Length: 417
Image 1 (spheres, rainbow, N blue to C red):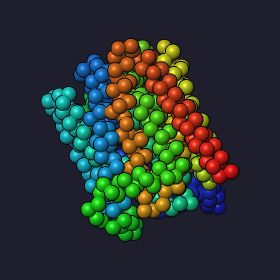
Image 2 (cartoon, rainbow, N blue to C red):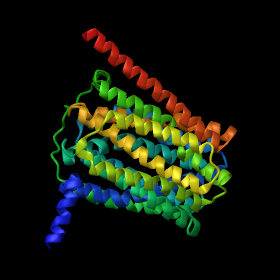
Image 3 (cartoon, rainbow, N blue to C red):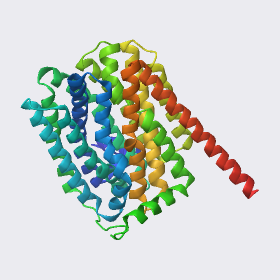
């Protein structure tokens, strides 16, 4: 009994977010749902490439899926600041559940066409445009400021554990039952997250009064971010890496089939390798969350992601590729958790929803640009060139951002002197 209490106390000390009942409801519900999400992502990418044999058309899928985030994230941030986040999440998760079930039925009946997948990807994109900033800022309401980084890292841990298990299961399911089974499982998995949300009891007070001033609210939020050096430097770094160094979803299916000569199971294990690295990184970040986010970790991990992408541009060996994807996953979760925590901890309550909508824009909203960039290069020059081009472009932008930050600090010190 005492031994069990010691273990519980040790877990609470290392992962303090788990001491909050509401967070446990949220976290548990996400576990099963995210497993289904990664099964669907794996199956969808493979289905599109199998249907079209075109990296460019695979990249176009990303345009439809993430285009709404690019166009409407800033508007979504205003709504997140105005309405109870739990109600928003119940709505968005229901839409995502229906989207998965419709896709499953289309594939199962043999009537699916490429344009069907694009339309349903757009539906997913619109739902995620509202869901992502809401879900990220909802963690703050569940655990508070002191344990926010632990909550973000633990949430990231289950995302990335799902990256390990989901693609691996998807590879087996696709081989034995086809892609439709993956989509069906994802649709059913949303039941878990909906039950978790219903069980959560939070204060549903609206932080910002509802008005008709949407555009002024957006501009005021952008001015708020621009006035805070920590916020805008984190956003710019996320934009550089999110746009160009996170396009493995476009390049990896081509890389697996054309360079490594692997089928669906081999492709899914590459995704699982990245998820394994991310899961390890998330556990380490969560256990060290009391130290808070550091700018040095943010830019060092971003640079490491870019360099490993460039190295992938030279690789033709499956085992080496698995190791590199583990490393990319590890540094990716370090980078994203640091950016997320930096923004949430340095934004006030009134602006947190809008700040996280800008984070969503920088992370996912720029994906259409990156997907077309990666898809175009991969189609013309191959997947190795696609990895290398994405890595070196993101690294060049990070260097420019760092030089700009240093010059800004130097000029400020001179003016103060």
